[in-house]
Image (cartoon, rainbow, N blue to C red; front, top):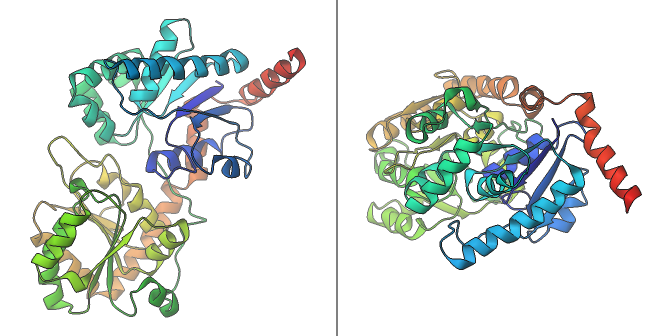
Length: 401
């Protein structure tokens, strides 16, 4: 079943969903998929570094709604551009990166004779759309019209069933993965740690956008207790977001500013080194209203680097780990249990090493992209005939041209 993936978020643009799509679709058989993605800065250089066919078009939406004239005009422009690509390559199905806005483009095209479409669901965008009557109206039509909805976790699948009334028969749970050739364990290296600004201090790491749902504030609130037991502990936060001023103020309020490092958005190299050199990884996520952590790719990356992980009970984080062998989920709405667990694990190097070895094995066996690539071939129905479809269509287009 040759597919056309439409996703605004795609490398070189950073983002969990974009990384998921890149790692997955580039491993599918040649000729079985093409990608339509936004024309980000650096796209030309990125696209020249691989063989995955990518069509770059202006795919950014200032807002997702239709009611403003600029919104409806934007959907019309994008739909026209995608329709030209469809007419040239004749995909059997469209894969939409999200229900809105990409899914609404596919829904519109289908109404005018376009191909059927599948839609990915990550959790966060469903919550966002559900908070707006306009976006909710759009998302419901997309989800009702989709042949299949691919949920990134059982938690997201439950949201689809319970809150959006998507029949279970049309939902497929397919987890994101991790590149276990890139995210690998490494021995403790003092030179690297000095460069990171850590020295020989025990380090708890969190990677993710600075937002209330991620729970960095809970870890900061836990630090006074942790510091009494482990005076030289450091909490390193890699990421950026609108919560940073509040988190910085909170660290000062609790008297732990010297124990918190705000690293900002990491480069790829910096990210891997942080995972490799930290002592413990924590994603103290919690539910904020209807906002939940759909899955938690960072938990996979940390485990692939041989680190035990702690996460909040909200959302799909439990699906990333082999509890209690590679990590645990705990209540992170208050700092008490988080502080207790962090102290216990930081003081037990043997336990951390044992869990780290199990974490690496777990990531390799369950979430390696090569493993998930084979699952994707089965889910997408890709066979040898499919592999040649886009290649044949491209050859025919060249001959006609």
